Image 1 (cartoon, rainbow, N blue to C red):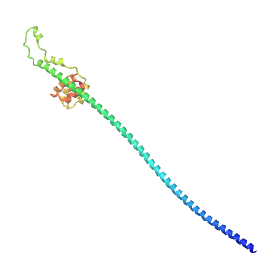
Image 2: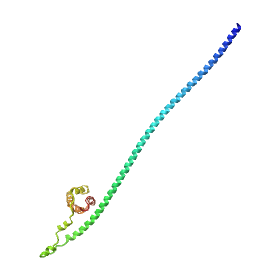
Image 3: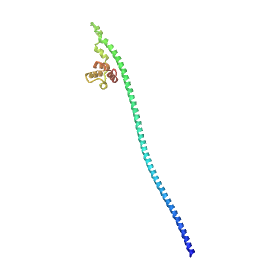
Image 4: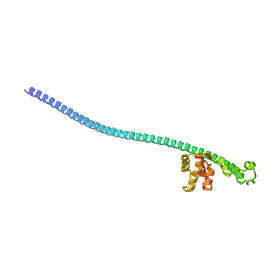
Length: 222
C-alpha cells in the first residue's frame, strides 16, 4: 500500500513538473506573440508612412510635370513671338529700304526736273524778251515776222494726264490745302504741265516735299 502511494506521489510530482514546464513554455509563447504583434504594428506603421511618402512623391511629380508643360508652352509662345518680331523687323527694314529707294528716285527726278526747268527758262527768256521786228512791205513781212508767244508756249506743251491719276497724286501730296490754288494746280497737271511749272504757276512757289510727292506719282513731266 505504501509503495502504491509513493508511486502515485511520484507521478503527481512529475505531472506538476511537466505542468510547470508547459506553463513556462506558454509564457514564452505569449511573449513571442506580443513581440510579433509589436513587429506587425511597426511594419504597418512603416507601410503607412511609405504610402504617404509615395502619395506625396506622386503629387510632387504631377506638379513638376505641370510646371514643365507650362514652361514648354511659354517657351513655344516666346519663340513664336521672337519669330514674329524678326518678321516684322524684316518687313520694316524692307519698307524702309523701299522708301529710301523711292526717295532717292524722287531726289534724282527733282534734280533732273530742276535742270530741265532751268534749260526751259533759259530758252524761253530770250524768246519772250525779243523786241518786235520793224514792219516791212510785201511777202517778206510774213516770212520774217516773229511767231506769236502763244505759238512758243504750244510747242512746249506736254501731253495731258488722266484726271484720276492727277487726283490720286494730289490726294497723297502734302501741303496743298483746299483753296483755288489746288484746283488751278489740278487743271495745270491735267493739261500736261510739268510738276515744277504747275506748282509755281498755281502757288507762286515750289514746296520741295510737294514736288517730290508729285514727281514720284506723275513724273517730272507727262
